[in-house]
Length: 505
Ligand code: ADP
Image (cartoon, rainbow, N blue to C red; front, side, top):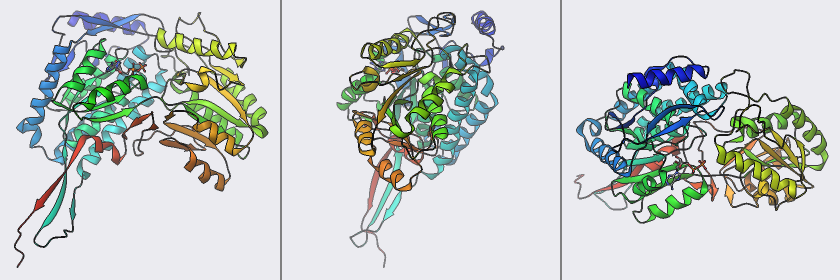
Protein backbone atom coordinates (compact mmCIF):
# COMPACT_ATOMS: atom_id res chain seq x y z
CA UNK A 1 0.00 0.00 0.00
CA UNK A 2 2.78 2.38 1.01
CA UNK A 3 4.63 1.60 -2.20
CA UNK A 4 1.49 2.04 -4.26
CA UNK A 5 0.87 5.49 -2.81
CA UNK A 6 4.49 6.48 -3.34
CA UNK A 7 4.53 5.44 -6.96
CA UNK A 8 1.20 7.20 -7.43
CA UNK A 9 2.72 10.36 -6.02
CA UNK A 10 5.66 10.07 -8.37
CA UNK A 11 3.24 10.02 -11.28
CA UNK A 12 1.26 12.93 -9.88
CA UNK A 13 4.44 14.90 -9.34
CA UNK A 14 5.46 14.11 -12.90
CA UNK A 15 2.10 15.61 -13.87
CA UNK A 16 3.18 18.83 -12.18
CA UNK A 17 1.88 18.23 -8.69
CA UNK A 18 3.24 18.13 -5.17
CA UNK A 19 3.35 15.22 -2.79
CA UNK A 20 0.02 14.79 -1.06
CA UNK A 21 0.02 11.13 -0.12
CA UNK A 22 -2.26 11.56 2.88
CA UNK A 23 -5.19 12.52 0.71
CA UNK A 24 -4.67 10.06 -2.10
CA UNK A 25 -6.75 7.02 -1.30
CA UNK A 26 -6.55 3.95 -3.46
CA UNK A 27 -9.22 1.99 -1.59
CA UNK A 28 -12.95 2.32 -1.20
CA UNK A 29 -14.61 3.28 2.09
CA UNK A 30 -17.07 0.87 3.66
CA UNK A 31 -18.13 1.01 7.28
CA UNK A 32 -15.11 3.10 8.24
CA UNK A 33 -12.65 0.69 6.62
CA UNK A 34 -10.55 1.41 3.55
CA UNK A 35 -11.06 -1.72 1.51
CA UNK A 36 -10.33 -3.49 -1.77
CA UNK A 37 -13.13 -4.98 -3.78
CA UNK A 38 -14.06 -8.48 -2.67
CA UNK A 39 -12.62 -9.94 -5.88
CA UNK A 40 -9.55 -7.65 -5.79
CA UNK A 41 -10.46 -6.18 -9.15
CA UNK A 42 -9.27 -2.62 -9.82
CA UNK A 43 -9.67 -0.03 -12.55
CA UNK A 44 -7.37 2.71 -13.74
CA UNK A 45 -7.81 6.43 -13.36
CA UNK A 46 -6.34 8.48 -16.21
CA UNK A 47 -5.36 12.08 -16.72
CA UNK A 48 -7.43 13.13 -19.76
CA UNK A 49 -4.85 15.79 -20.65
CA UNK A 50 -2.14 13.25 -21.48
CA UNK A 51 -3.71 9.82 -21.12
CA UNK A 52 -1.34 8.89 -18.31
CA UNK A 53 -2.59 6.40 -15.73
CA UNK A 54 -2.43 8.28 -12.43
CA UNK A 55 -3.70 5.56 -10.17
CA UNK A 56 -6.06 2.68 -9.66
CA UNK A 57 -8.98 2.14 -7.34
CA UNK A 58 -11.07 -0.88 -6.36
CA UNK A 59 -13.66 -2.03 -8.86
CA UNK A 60 -16.34 -2.75 -6.30
CA UNK A 61 -18.94 -5.42 -6.96
CA UNK A 62 -22.67 -5.55 -6.31
CA UNK A 63 -21.92 -7.60 -3.19
CA UNK A 64 -19.55 -4.87 -2.00
CA UNK A 65 -22.19 -2.24 -2.63
CA UNK A 66 -24.65 -4.35 -0.65
CA UNK A 67 -22.20 -4.36 2.22
CA UNK A 68 -21.95 -0.58 2.02
CA UNK A 69 -25.75 -0.29 2.15
CA UNK A 70 -25.80 -2.56 5.24
CA UNK A 71 -23.09 -0.42 6.85
CA UNK A 72 -25.05 2.75 6.13
CA UNK A 73 -28.20 1.16 7.54
CA UNK A 74 -26.43 0.02 10.68
CA UNK A 75 -24.88 3.45 11.12
CA UNK A 76 -28.29 5.08 10.64
CA UNK A 77 -29.76 2.90 13.36
CA UNK A 78 -26.78 3.18 15.68
CA UNK A 79 -27.20 4.93 18.99
CA UNK A 80 -24.14 7.05 18.24
CA UNK A 81 -25.70 8.62 15.12
CA UNK A 82 -29.34 8.62 16.18
CA UNK A 83 -28.65 10.29 19.48
CA UNK A 84 -26.80 13.17 17.89
CA UNK A 85 -28.59 16.45 18.06
CA UNK A 86 -28.89 18.72 15.07
CA UNK A 87 -26.20 20.81 16.67
CA UNK A 88 -23.89 17.79 16.94
CA UNK A 89 -24.34 17.05 13.24
CA UNK A 90 -23.84 20.70 12.45
CA UNK A 91 -20.56 20.68 14.37
CA UNK A 92 -19.33 17.60 12.53
CA UNK A 93 -20.11 19.23 9.19
CA UNK A 94 -18.29 22.37 10.33
CA UNK A 95 -15.21 20.28 11.15
CA UNK A 96 -15.40 18.64 7.73
CA UNK A 97 -15.71 22.08 6.15
CA UNK A 98 -12.65 23.33 8.00
CA UNK A 99 -10.53 20.36 6.91
CA UNK A 100 -11.59 20.71 3.27
CA UNK A 101 -10.73 24.39 3.45
CA UNK A 102 -7.26 23.54 4.78
CA UNK A 103 -6.72 21.07 1.93
CA UNK A 104 -8.12 23.15 -0.92
CA UNK A 105 -4.96 23.06 -3.00
CA UNK A 106 -4.38 19.32 -2.62
CA UNK A 107 -7.96 18.42 -3.53
CA UNK A 108 -7.80 20.78 -6.50
CA UNK A 109 -4.61 19.11 -7.71
CA UNK A 110 -6.18 15.67 -7.51
CA UNK A 111 -9.24 17.01 -9.32
CA UNK A 112 -7.18 18.54 -12.12
CA UNK A 113 -5.12 15.37 -12.46
CA UNK A 114 -8.16 13.16 -13.00
CA UNK A 115 -10.58 15.53 -14.75
CA UNK A 116 -8.29 17.83 -16.74
CA UNK A 117 -10.07 20.85 -15.30
CA UNK A 118 -7.88 23.98 -15.23
CA UNK A 119 -6.37 24.30 -11.75
CA UNK A 120 -7.99 27.65 -11.02
CA UNK A 121 -11.38 26.16 -11.81
CA UNK A 122 -10.60 23.15 -9.62
CA UNK A 123 -9.78 25.46 -6.72
CA UNK A 124 -13.00 27.31 -7.44
CA UNK A 125 -14.91 24.04 -7.33
CA UNK A 126 -13.38 23.03 -4.01
CA UNK A 127 -14.53 26.34 -2.55
CA UNK A 128 -17.96 26.03 -4.14
CA UNK A 129 -18.30 22.40 -3.07
CA UNK A 130 -17.17 23.20 0.43
CA UNK A 131 -19.69 26.02 0.66
CA UNK A 132 -22.39 23.31 0.56
CA UNK A 133 -20.84 21.62 3.60
CA UNK A 134 -20.89 24.94 5.43
CA UNK A 135 -24.39 25.81 4.25
CA UNK A 136 -25.84 22.48 5.36
CA UNK A 137 -23.96 22.69 8.66
CA UNK A 138 -26.01 25.84 9.20
CA UNK A 139 -29.26 24.40 7.81
CA UNK A 140 -28.99 21.28 10.01
CA UNK A 141 -30.23 23.37 12.94
CA UNK A 142 -33.16 24.82 11.05
CA UNK A 143 -35.06 21.73 9.92
CA UNK A 144 -38.19 23.01 11.59
CA UNK A 145 -41.51 21.27 12.04
CA UNK A 146 -44.88 22.90 12.68
CA UNK A 147 -47.59 23.03 15.29
CA UNK A 148 -50.82 23.56 13.41
CA UNK A 149 -54.03 24.88 15.04
CA UNK A 150 -56.35 21.91 15.33
CA UNK A 151 -59.97 21.90 14.20
CA UNK A 152 -60.89 19.61 17.08
CA UNK A 153 -60.85 20.53 20.78
CA UNK A 154 -58.34 18.86 23.08
CA UNK A 155 -56.09 17.99 20.19
CA UNK A 156 -52.76 19.21 18.89
CA UNK A 157 -51.39 18.70 15.42
CA UNK A 158 -47.63 18.35 15.44
CA UNK A 159 -45.62 18.04 12.25
CA UNK A 160 -42.00 16.98 12.40
CA UNK A 161 -39.30 16.19 9.88
CA UNK A 162 -37.28 13.03 10.24
CA UNK A 163 -34.37 11.65 8.21
CA UNK A 164 -35.46 9.15 5.56
CA UNK A 165 -32.62 6.70 6.29
CA UNK A 166 -30.01 5.49 3.81
CA UNK A 167 -29.54 7.62 0.70
CA UNK A 168 -27.62 6.47 -2.37
CA UNK A 169 -25.78 9.28 -4.13
CA UNK A 170 -24.64 8.83 -7.72
CA UNK A 171 -22.44 11.63 -9.01
CA UNK A 172 -20.81 12.71 -12.29
CA UNK A 173 -17.26 13.66 -13.29
CA UNK A 174 -17.80 17.28 -14.30
CA UNK A 175 -17.96 18.50 -10.69
CA UNK A 176 -16.20 15.64 -8.91
CA UNK A 177 -16.48 17.23 -5.47
CA UNK A 178 -19.37 19.69 -5.46
CA UNK A 179 -21.93 17.15 -6.65
CA UNK A 180 -20.99 14.95 -3.70
CA UNK A 181 -21.05 17.64 -1.02
CA UNK A 182 -24.28 19.17 -2.36
CA UNK A 183 -25.96 15.82 -1.74
CA UNK A 184 -24.04 14.43 1.24
CA UNK A 185 -24.08 17.76 3.10
CA UNK A 186 -27.87 17.86 2.95
CA UNK A 187 -28.24 14.17 3.76
CA UNK A 188 -26.03 14.32 6.84
CA UNK A 189 -27.60 17.55 8.03
CA UNK A 190 -30.97 15.80 7.96
CA UNK A 191 -29.57 12.81 9.87
CA UNK A 192 -29.35 10.34 6.96
CA UNK A 193 -26.42 8.09 6.14
CA UNK A 194 -25.11 7.67 2.61
CA UNK A 195 -23.52 5.40 0.04
CA UNK A 196 -21.73 7.47 -2.59
CA UNK A 197 -21.02 6.10 -6.06
CA UNK A 198 -18.74 8.64 -7.74
CA UNK A 199 -18.02 8.71 -11.44
CA UNK A 200 -15.52 6.15 -12.67
CA UNK A 201 -13.61 9.05 -14.28
CA UNK A 202 -13.07 10.95 -11.02
CA UNK A 203 -13.05 8.60 -8.00
CA UNK A 204 -9.91 10.08 -6.38
CA UNK A 205 -11.48 13.43 -5.53
CA UNK A 206 -14.42 11.59 -3.95
CA UNK A 207 -12.11 9.42 -1.85
CA UNK A 208 -10.02 12.41 -0.76
CA UNK A 209 -13.09 14.26 0.44
CA UNK A 210 -14.33 11.12 2.22
CA UNK A 211 -10.96 10.81 3.95
CA UNK A 212 -11.41 14.31 5.33
CA UNK A 213 -14.91 13.38 6.51
CA UNK A 214 -13.34 10.50 8.42
CA UNK A 215 -10.69 12.84 9.86
CA UNK A 216 -13.46 15.21 10.92
CA UNK A 217 -14.89 12.46 13.11
CA UNK A 218 -17.98 11.61 11.09
CA UNK A 219 -18.82 8.17 12.50
CA UNK A 220 -18.02 5.01 10.59
CA UNK A 221 -20.67 3.87 8.14
CA UNK A 222 -22.26 7.32 7.85
CA UNK A 223 -20.41 8.01 4.60
CA UNK A 224 -19.47 5.04 2.42
CA UNK A 225 -17.83 5.36 -0.99
CA UNK A 226 -18.07 2.65 -3.61
CA UNK A 227 -15.73 3.06 -6.59
CA UNK A 228 -16.62 1.03 -9.66
CA UNK A 229 -16.62 1.14 -13.42
CA UNK A 230 -19.66 -1.11 -13.53
CA UNK A 231 -22.29 1.41 -12.55
CA UNK A 232 -25.41 -0.23 -14.00
CA UNK A 233 -25.78 -3.26 -11.68
CA UNK A 234 -24.94 -1.14 -8.65
CA UNK A 235 -27.47 1.50 -9.71
CA UNK A 236 -29.96 -1.34 -10.05
CA UNK A 237 -29.17 -2.54 -6.53
CA UNK A 238 -29.72 0.99 -5.17
CA UNK A 239 -33.13 1.02 -6.86
CA UNK A 240 -34.14 -2.44 -5.66
CA UNK A 241 -32.73 -2.53 -2.15
CA UNK A 242 -35.45 -1.97 0.45
CA UNK A 243 -32.76 -0.52 2.71
CA UNK A 244 -32.13 2.40 0.38
CA UNK A 245 -34.83 4.98 0.99
CA UNK A 246 -33.71 7.63 -1.45
CA UNK A 247 -31.58 8.07 -4.55
CA UNK A 248 -30.03 11.33 -5.58
CA UNK A 249 -28.50 11.34 -9.04
CA UNK A 250 -26.70 13.92 -11.15
CA UNK A 251 -25.86 12.84 -14.67
CA UNK A 252 -27.31 12.10 -18.05
CA UNK A 253 -31.03 12.25 -18.77
CA UNK A 254 -30.88 8.72 -20.14
CA UNK A 255 -29.52 7.20 -16.90
CA UNK A 256 -31.77 9.45 -14.82
CA UNK A 257 -34.85 8.09 -16.57
CA UNK A 258 -33.66 4.55 -16.04
CA UNK A 259 -33.17 5.12 -12.31
CA UNK A 260 -36.54 6.87 -12.04
CA UNK A 261 -38.26 3.88 -13.63
CA UNK A 262 -36.36 1.32 -11.56
CA UNK A 263 -36.95 3.18 -8.30
CA UNK A 264 -40.71 3.26 -8.90
CA UNK A 265 -41.28 -0.22 -7.54
CA UNK A 266 -39.88 0.66 -4.15
CA UNK A 267 -41.56 4.12 -4.19
CA UNK A 268 -38.25 5.69 -3.35
CA UNK A 269 -37.47 9.32 -2.92
CA UNK A 270 -35.73 10.33 -6.10
CA UNK A 271 -33.87 13.55 -6.79
CA UNK A 272 -32.65 13.90 -10.37
CA UNK A 273 -30.42 16.63 -11.76
CA UNK A 274 -30.21 15.81 -15.44
CA UNK A 275 -29.10 17.38 -18.68
CA UNK A 276 -30.19 20.73 -20.00
CA UNK A 277 -30.31 22.50 -23.34
CA UNK A 278 -29.88 26.02 -22.02
CA UNK A 279 -30.97 28.92 -24.20
CA UNK A 280 -28.98 32.15 -23.90
CA UNK A 281 -30.89 35.06 -25.41
CA UNK A 282 -29.34 38.41 -26.24
CA UNK A 283 -32.00 41.04 -26.94
CA UNK A 284 -31.45 44.31 -28.80
CA UNK A 285 -32.01 45.94 -25.40
CA UNK A 286 -28.96 44.20 -23.91
CA UNK A 287 -25.61 45.54 -22.84
CA UNK A 288 -23.62 43.55 -25.40
CA UNK A 289 -20.28 43.70 -23.55
CA UNK A 290 -21.92 42.21 -20.46
CA UNK A 291 -23.68 39.61 -22.59
CA UNK A 292 -20.36 38.54 -24.10
CA UNK A 293 -18.84 38.26 -20.58
CA UNK A 294 -21.78 36.12 -19.51
CA UNK A 295 -21.60 34.00 -22.65
CA UNK A 296 -17.92 33.26 -22.08
CA UNK A 297 -18.50 32.29 -18.45
CA UNK A 298 -21.57 30.21 -19.13
CA UNK A 299 -20.30 28.44 -22.25
CA UNK A 300 -16.58 27.92 -21.71
CA UNK A 301 -16.29 27.25 -17.98
CA UNK A 302 -15.14 23.67 -17.43
CA UNK A 303 -14.65 23.34 -21.21
CA UNK A 304 -18.41 23.62 -21.69
CA UNK A 305 -18.94 20.50 -19.63
CA UNK A 306 -21.59 21.72 -17.22
CA UNK A 307 -25.28 20.94 -17.36
CA UNK A 308 -26.12 24.65 -17.01
CA UNK A 309 -23.78 25.69 -19.86
CA UNK A 310 -25.47 27.76 -22.55
CA UNK A 311 -26.22 25.38 -25.41
CA UNK A 312 -28.01 27.64 -27.92
CA UNK A 313 -27.35 31.36 -28.27
CA UNK A 314 -30.28 33.31 -29.71
CA UNK A 315 -29.17 36.80 -30.71
CA UNK A 316 -31.50 39.54 -31.95
CA UNK A 317 -30.84 41.12 -35.35
CA UNK A 318 -29.89 44.57 -34.06
CA UNK A 319 -26.97 43.38 -31.92
CA UNK A 320 -26.10 40.21 -33.81
CA UNK A 321 -22.99 41.38 -35.66
CA UNK A 322 -21.56 43.16 -32.63
CA UNK A 323 -22.15 40.17 -30.33
CA UNK A 324 -20.67 37.64 -32.74
CA UNK A 325 -17.55 39.67 -33.49
CA UNK A 326 -16.86 40.39 -29.81
CA UNK A 327 -17.45 36.75 -28.87
CA UNK A 328 -15.11 35.61 -31.65
CA UNK A 329 -12.33 37.85 -30.35
CA UNK A 330 -12.72 36.53 -26.82
CA UNK A 331 -12.96 32.87 -27.88
CA UNK A 332 -9.84 33.09 -30.02
CA UNK A 333 -7.92 34.53 -27.05
CA UNK A 334 -8.72 31.54 -24.80
CA UNK A 335 -5.67 29.63 -23.63
CA UNK A 336 -6.07 25.89 -24.13
CA UNK A 337 -3.72 23.41 -22.48
CA UNK A 338 -2.78 21.17 -19.55
CA UNK A 339 -4.91 22.05 -16.55
CA UNK A 340 -2.14 22.49 -14.02
CA UNK A 341 -0.78 25.66 -15.68
CA UNK A 342 -2.32 28.64 -13.95
CA UNK A 343 -3.01 30.55 -17.15
CA UNK A 344 -4.88 27.73 -18.89
CA UNK A 345 -8.61 28.38 -19.37
CA UNK A 346 -9.66 25.36 -21.42
CA UNK A 347 -8.55 21.81 -20.68
CA UNK A 348 -9.29 18.56 -22.50
CA UNK A 349 -12.66 16.88 -22.77
CA UNK A 350 -13.10 14.23 -20.13
CA UNK A 351 -12.92 11.09 -22.26
CA UNK A 352 -13.03 9.71 -25.78
CA UNK A 353 -16.80 9.28 -25.72
CA UNK A 354 -17.29 12.99 -25.01
CA UNK A 355 -14.65 13.94 -27.54
CA UNK A 356 -16.30 11.84 -30.26
CA UNK A 357 -19.69 13.30 -29.40
CA UNK A 358 -18.51 16.92 -29.64
CA UNK A 359 -16.69 16.24 -32.95
CA UNK A 360 -19.73 14.45 -34.38
CA UNK A 361 -22.09 17.29 -33.39
CA UNK A 362 -19.87 19.84 -35.11
CA UNK A 363 -19.59 17.70 -38.25
CA UNK A 364 -23.35 17.22 -38.25
CA UNK A 365 -23.89 21.01 -38.15
CA UNK A 366 -21.24 21.52 -40.83
CA UNK A 367 -23.04 19.06 -43.09
CA UNK A 368 -26.28 20.99 -42.53
CA UNK A 369 -24.75 24.24 -43.82
CA UNK A 370 -24.01 25.90 -40.49
CA UNK A 371 -21.11 28.35 -40.54
CA UNK A 372 -18.03 27.56 -38.47
CA UNK A 373 -16.45 30.90 -37.73
CA UNK A 374 -13.95 29.78 -35.09
CA UNK A 375 -12.42 26.43 -34.11
CA UNK A 376 -14.33 23.40 -35.35
CA UNK A 377 -11.39 21.05 -35.01
CA UNK A 378 -9.37 19.04 -32.56
CA UNK A 379 -5.88 20.05 -31.38
CA UNK A 380 -3.82 16.84 -31.65
CA UNK A 381 -0.56 18.57 -30.74
CA UNK A 382 -1.94 19.17 -27.21
CA UNK A 383 -3.38 15.69 -26.72
CA UNK A 384 -6.01 13.40 -28.15
CA UNK A 385 -8.91 14.87 -26.11
CA UNK A 386 -8.40 18.57 -26.82
CA UNK A 387 -11.04 20.33 -28.93
CA UNK A 388 -10.68 23.94 -30.03
CA UNK A 389 -13.17 26.46 -28.60
CA UNK A 390 -15.68 26.79 -31.40
CA UNK A 391 -18.31 29.23 -32.63
CA UNK A 392 -20.89 28.13 -35.18
CA UNK A 393 -23.54 30.44 -36.62
CA UNK A 394 -26.73 29.75 -38.58
CA UNK A 395 -27.25 26.47 -36.75
CA UNK A 396 -30.49 24.97 -38.13
CA UNK A 397 -33.14 23.48 -35.81
CA UNK A 398 -32.44 20.07 -37.33
CA UNK A 399 -28.82 20.09 -36.14
CA UNK A 400 -27.86 18.00 -33.11
CA UNK A 401 -26.18 21.09 -31.67
CA UNK A 402 -29.64 22.66 -31.54
CA UNK A 403 -31.67 19.78 -30.20
CA UNK A 404 -29.20 18.15 -27.81
CA UNK A 405 -26.73 19.20 -25.16
CA UNK A 406 -23.23 19.30 -26.67
CA UNK A 407 -21.34 19.31 -23.33
CA UNK A 408 -18.25 20.81 -24.92
CA UNK A 409 -16.66 24.14 -25.91
CA UNK A 410 -18.98 24.84 -28.83
CA UNK A 411 -21.17 27.96 -29.02
CA UNK A 412 -24.07 27.64 -31.47
CA UNK A 413 -25.56 30.95 -32.55
CA UNK A 414 -28.98 31.57 -34.08
CA UNK A 415 -30.34 34.95 -35.20
CA UNK A 416 -33.91 35.99 -34.27
CA UNK A 417 -36.28 38.85 -35.08
CA UNK A 418 -38.55 39.43 -32.07
CA UNK A 419 -39.19 38.45 -28.46
CA UNK A 420 -42.00 36.01 -29.24
CA UNK A 421 -39.77 34.10 -31.65
CA UNK A 422 -36.93 33.96 -29.10
CA UNK A 423 -39.19 32.61 -26.37
CA UNK A 424 -40.77 30.07 -28.68
CA UNK A 425 -37.34 28.80 -29.78
CA UNK A 426 -35.88 28.84 -26.28
CA UNK A 427 -38.74 26.69 -24.98
CA UNK A 428 -38.78 24.36 -27.97
CA UNK A 429 -37.02 21.54 -26.11
CA UNK A 430 -37.98 18.80 -23.67
CA UNK A 431 -35.23 19.95 -21.33
CA UNK A 432 -35.61 22.78 -18.85
CA UNK A 433 -32.65 23.25 -16.53
CA UNK A 434 -31.14 26.72 -16.89
CA UNK A 435 -31.84 29.62 -19.24
CA UNK A 436 -30.21 33.02 -19.62
CA UNK A 437 -31.11 36.30 -21.21
CA UNK A 438 -29.69 39.78 -21.45
CA UNK A 439 -31.97 42.80 -21.53
CA UNK A 440 -31.94 46.20 -19.86
CA UNK A 441 -35.67 46.66 -20.31
CA UNK A 442 -37.46 46.06 -17.01
CA UNK A 443 -40.77 45.07 -18.58
CA UNK A 444 -39.05 42.62 -20.86
CA UNK A 445 -37.02 41.19 -17.98
CA UNK A 446 -40.10 40.15 -16.02
CA UNK A 447 -42.02 39.04 -19.10
CA UNK A 448 -39.26 36.77 -20.35
CA UNK A 449 -38.15 35.46 -16.94
CA UNK A 450 -41.69 34.23 -16.31
CA UNK A 451 -42.10 32.68 -19.74
CA UNK A 452 -38.89 30.63 -19.79
CA UNK A 453 -39.59 26.95 -19.18
CA UNK A 454 -36.59 26.27 -16.94
CA UNK A 455 -35.83 25.78 -13.27
CA UNK A 456 -33.20 28.55 -13.13
CA UNK A 457 -32.98 31.84 -14.99
CA UNK A 458 -29.91 34.05 -15.29
CA UNK A 459 -30.95 37.62 -16.07
CA UNK A 460 -27.93 39.61 -17.22
CA UNK A 461 -25.82 36.92 -15.55
CA UNK A 462 -23.99 33.90 -16.96
CA UNK A 463 -23.03 32.11 -13.73
CA UNK A 464 -25.99 31.42 -11.50
CA UNK A 465 -25.08 28.49 -9.24
CA UNK A 466 -24.96 29.43 -5.56
CA UNK A 467 -25.34 27.38 -2.39
CA UNK A 468 -28.14 29.64 -1.17
CA UNK A 469 -30.25 29.15 -4.32
CA UNK A 470 -32.31 26.09 -5.33
CA UNK A 471 -30.63 24.19 -8.16
CA UNK A 472 -32.80 22.02 -10.36
CA UNK A 473 -34.79 21.68 -13.53
CA UNK A 474 -38.27 21.30 -14.98
CA UNK A 475 -39.56 19.09 -17.81
CA UNK A 476 -37.07 16.27 -18.51
CA UNK A 477 -34.23 18.00 -16.71
CA UNK A 478 -35.13 16.50 -13.39
CA UNK A 479 -37.08 16.49 -10.16
CA UNK A 480 -36.18 17.93 -6.78
CA UNK A 481 -33.92 20.78 -5.80
CA UNK A 482 -30.43 20.82 -4.38
CA UNK A 483 -28.70 23.47 -2.32
CA UNK A 484 -30.72 26.22 -0.60
CA UNK A 485 -33.13 25.39 2.21
CA UNK A 486 -35.05 23.17 -0.22
CA UNK A 487 -32.04 20.89 -0.61
CA UNK A 488 -32.94 19.15 2.64
CA UNK A 489 -36.44 18.18 1.49
CA UNK A 490 -35.42 15.01 -0.34
CA UNK A 491 -33.77 13.64 2.79
CA UNK A 492 -36.62 14.08 5.26
CA UNK A 493 -40.01 12.49 5.80
CA UNK A 494 -42.78 14.66 7.11
CA UNK A 495 -44.48 13.01 10.06
CA UNK A 496 -47.78 14.17 11.50
CA UNK A 497 -48.38 13.38 15.14
CA UNK A 498 -51.91 13.75 16.41
CA UNK A 499 -51.99 14.41 20.15
CA UNK A 500 -55.50 13.56 21.29
CA UNK A 501 -57.61 13.73 24.43
CA UNK A 502 -55.60 16.49 25.98
CA UNK A 503 -57.04 17.90 29.16
CA UNK A 504 -56.79 21.64 29.10
CA UNK A 505 -59.21 22.43 31.90
P1 ADP B 1 -22.17 11.19 -18.25
O1 ADP B 1 -22.64 10.88 -19.63
O2 ADP B 1 -22.15 12.61 -17.93
O3 ADP B 1 -20.94 10.43 -17.84
P2 ADP B 1 -23.76 9.34 -16.81
O4 ADP B 1 -25.21 9.49 -16.53
O5 ADP B 1 -23.34 8.22 -17.71
O6 ADP B 1 -23.32 10.74 -17.34
O7 ADP B 1 -22.92 9.22 -15.49
C1 ADP B 1 -23.23 9.89 -14.29
C2 ADP B 1 -23.06 8.93 -13.14
O8 ADP B 1 -23.99 7.88 -13.31
C3 ADP B 1 -21.69 8.27 -13.06
O9 ADP B 1 -21.36 8.09 -11.69
C4 ADP B 1 -21.92 6.94 -13.73
O10 ADP B 1 -21.03 5.92 -13.31
C5 ADP B 1 -23.33 6.63 -13.25
N1 ADP B 1 -24.06 5.68 -14.09
C6 ADP B 1 -23.93 5.42 -15.40
N2 ADP B 1 -24.81 4.47 -15.79
C7 ADP B 1 -25.52 4.12 -14.69
C8 ADP B 1 -26.59 3.20 -14.42
N3 ADP B 1 -27.11 2.44 -15.38
N4 ADP B 1 -27.07 3.13 -13.16
C9 ADP B 1 -26.55 3.91 -12.18
N5 ADP B 1 -25.56 4.79 -12.37
C10 ADP B 1 -25.05 4.91 -13.60
